[in-house]
Length: 397
Image (cartoon, rainbow, N blue to C red; front, side):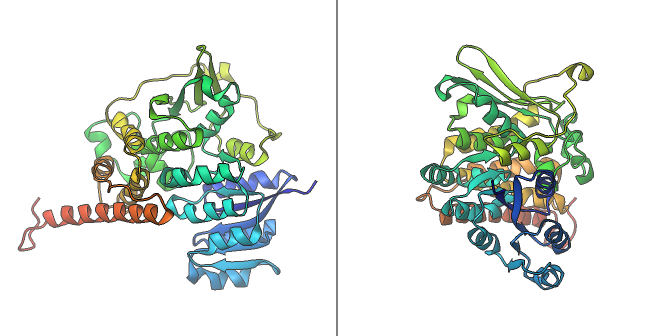
């Protein structure tokens, strides 16, 4: 049997690197195409090791040095449309999307056109465009396989019963790097503090999302689209140990949970091997050694952040795109020193409340809503900056 052909968007990021390590240990998988944003040095190393047929890089300035460092026979694409071109050229069996943010939307839709199954680590694509992506994938008879550990867990638990037997799904949350802080202590947290996650090692943006808990708001919307569930059937609880990745309660009161160590290689390998389970050399889960697993309801700033996901579902229309775009812009501002940590959620909340009236649901409408949300954040930050300075240029504070 020929190996399964896997195209990886974001191959130089955290998810992409772990995906390639899984592929390196599995002869049934072949990395046929790799795409990155600007890290041409690592992309060139990956191309030399895995020998894909085509690579793509978004940064046009990086294309020249990358071309000189690629092995012979590898096709190079570059520019903002390169990822979509890569998918159409490579025609993979499976597209694994590990890019951050709205950039994953166009190549994911291109993969559906090419009849490639989808492994989605890019939750933003589903949050923005689940109303378009999921019907298109179903119409094409394709699998949409979640790579988020929480949604992979739900996907696996749902195999234990019929969809109409589901009472609720419960997404667990570690609480992030600042889970023991509330009030002023969390509002004034530094970038370094917010990035110091106690159990997961992830990219910078998603680590900040974990600290604010907006990642769970996004995951609620993602679960809504992936599993065709109303907001009322999706809940979130705190689980600091990150061992139970999610659980599903059925109509008879039975609860099925998926447990594993906090290791993204597990859901990545499961998505790429589905419908089979991959055989992986991992140590058994030592529950007696852990001693206890704890759970708690959401309160305070956590509940406020997670409520944005429910709001986006109930508002419908362009709300998912606005939630995602506003959050990306606010997180970028925090990482760049433009706002305090405690301003992220209120800023996103304010923009989401002003979501424009829905137009016909097209990709362009969603991209326009994403751009609108980012402008609203930029304008709010500009007003804040102006308010700090007096008309004469004197500092007000």
